[in-house]
Amino acid sequence: MSDLTELGVAAIRDGVAAGDFTAVEVAEAFNANVAAASALNAFIVTTPEKALEAAQATDQRRAAGEALGRMGGVPIGMKDLFATRGVQTTAASHILEGFVPQYESTVSRKLWEAGAGMLGKLNLDQFAMGSSNETSYFGNVVSPWRRKDGGNAALAPGGSSGGSSAAVAARLCPAATGTDTGGSIRQPAAFTGITGIKPTYGRCSRWGVVAFASSLDQAGPMARDVRDCAIMLGAMAGHDPMDATSLDMPVPDWEAGLSPDLAGKRVGIPREYRMDGMDADVAASWERGIAWLKDAGATIVDISLPHTKYALPAYYIIAPAEASSNLARYDGVRYGLRELPDGAGLQDMYAATRAAGFGAEVKRRILIGTYVLSAGFYDAYYTQAQKVRALIARDFEQAWAHCDVILAPTAPSAAFALGDKSADPLAMYLNDVFAVPASLAGLPAISVPAGLNREGLPLGLQIIGKPFDEQGVLNAGLAIETRAEPAELPHRWW
Image 1 (cartoon, one colour):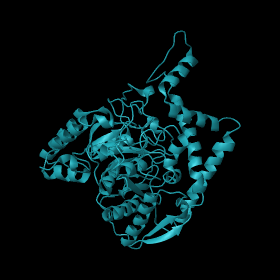
Image 2 (image 1 turned 90 degrees about the vertical axis):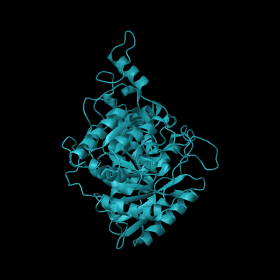
Image 3 (image 1 turned 45 degrees about the vertical axis):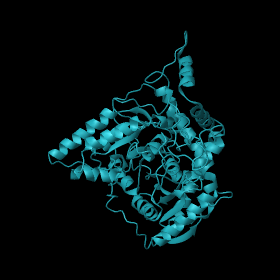
Image 4 (image 1 turned 180 degrees about the vertical axis):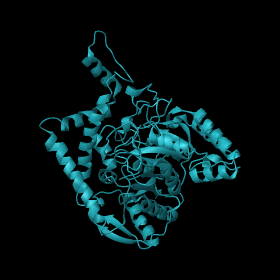
């Protein structure tokens, strides 16, 4: 039997259903990989017993002749932003260390009902705030990739879903959940040579997901390829009355609708994304992507998204403002960390708990958000940023008159070394320059592998689609996937 950990979601699901191997054999194989990969620090908590429990239930259902579910027999990693009943959920922050929810997030519940099992809770940037997975209280996640000829410098797996991207790339799990507020599924997917999709805002419930910026946060799958993402997204999505922003729409069968044929489709190339000083390898990858989509039958059209240059500043006003509000609930009273100095009053407890519990980047964003929401600055900053957001959304709406999907790079560079940008917040924030516009507009967007750069590191291409058109995004991603060189694996060093 071939190594089961080399199989993706579709192959595991179909193999278990056909009786080629058991779900327990799959779970045991991935549990072993997880246990052997502590050097990557991808998991905060491992739950091998949960993976085996779900696998045993799947095997029992198969023996009884029952349906196995969309994710039957597939063990996955769960980003530690999703509440998991009876299993610690921390958002990678000291302030939530030891918090064990008594409820299940809607997304994780749907996945368990679809037959998936949990290998563990994946590391991330603290409260999903970061682009390199260096802000976690539980330590940096290390990418499984190394530069071809640049020594053994530890590389960033991207963020905030860096534990998810590293785990999928290193074959610790066939797929993982991620969340994307300003690129936190797509950028880490690009950095590690995997596929990740952020669906339309509202497509997946936010209930039970630790909030960062509520008008931007969206859950999505990260997996080996487009088909696996389509399968997993189908299990995650759906209307949830517990989430007021949840879309009350039927969930299409995205897997059944997959097709790499783009005949009759128009692909927009935004001229504003061609920035001065763009990395040469990224630019070359973009050109190859254009050629691949032409080969798939698409017509390439030039489009303009004129307010693109304002997207990053607007995002870094809106997202911290919402974070400032959302994170006010962590006060040391109801759950999580409590710091109570001798003789301290209530306000002293609040201050001590937050000082000890929040990391530096989280504090920075809370301060920015509190500032832009304060009297005298609300209209000057927050209101203006919301107006810019509306203009960015309008740019996309006008572009859809000329194209069906948009092709752009996912990130401005390949993975950088851990520590290279952590001292300069602005340099770190620029990692999201290509990802943030789609987030502000609430649009579906996917990152697919698009080869390696000259240092042997993965690059990603991004497809942005119309609202609710995940199918069009997945199909364009599949057109790239079928024409790009087969995705390479990182050399095993861990």
